[in-house]
Amino acid sequence: LAPKPLRGRNVLVTAGPTFEPIDPVRGITNHSSGKMGFAIARAAAEAGAIVTLVAGPVHLSTPRHVRRIDVQTAREMHDAVLRQAPGQHAFIATAAVADWRPVEVHEHKLKKAEGGATAPTIAMTENPDILAEVARLPSPPYCVGFAAESEKLAEHADAKRRRKGIPLIVANLGPATFGRDDNALLLIDEQGQRELPEGGGTADKLSLARALIAELSRRLG
Ligand code: C5P
Image 1: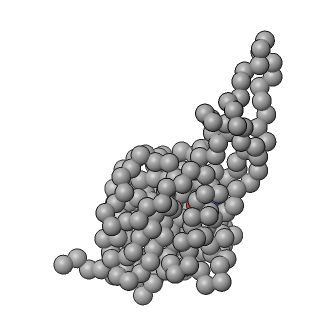
Image 2 (image 1 turned 30 degrees about the vertical axis):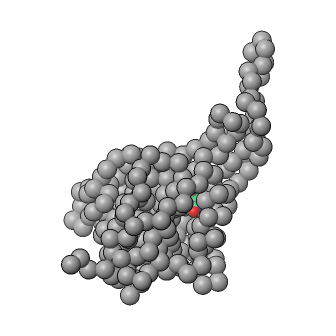
């Protein structure tokens, strides 16, 4: 029988992008397939956890024994996560949340002006930082963040970890991982760094997710 190190533990995961509407037919989104987050939700369920997955718009089927809540916008993701947060033992934030949203959502489709008049300007406002907010709760779950950096990976990821007040951040080592099935991860905490897969190279996202969940299980004790 497979070991169930997370039996009796509640694990909350965010995955995928968010979609911020401009009008009924347009919006702003991030590039994210959701594959890593769905693999993590699956690995946590395999390890015996009670898993809640808050997913932005993705084309993926729900892993077995995972409770899924679908959302579109960052604010919907924020509200769903904060509602689910009480009683969670771990929170793994893999979602590529849009940093900004249009101030105004137009009720009707924006039309091109006659005679090629100027293009519209879209005023933007900041979205809530879901992970930082969960980390600030009075008794927060063990929070794991993800970081996609284009340079000075470890340095920037660790700075992000401290800024958000979380114990563990996972940086994507693979250059262009969007939509791919394999990746490499760098785990960074107060003690230092650890690469997955061990010994370099890349691994498929499910293997990486299982290794990350094994690491999380050790930390939850
Ligand atoms: O600040 P940045 O977006 O680079 O941080 C990435 C980490 O923070 C990821 O774990 C992501 O899921 C989380 N995040 C969030 N809410 C936001 C922005 C990022 O939970 N508004």
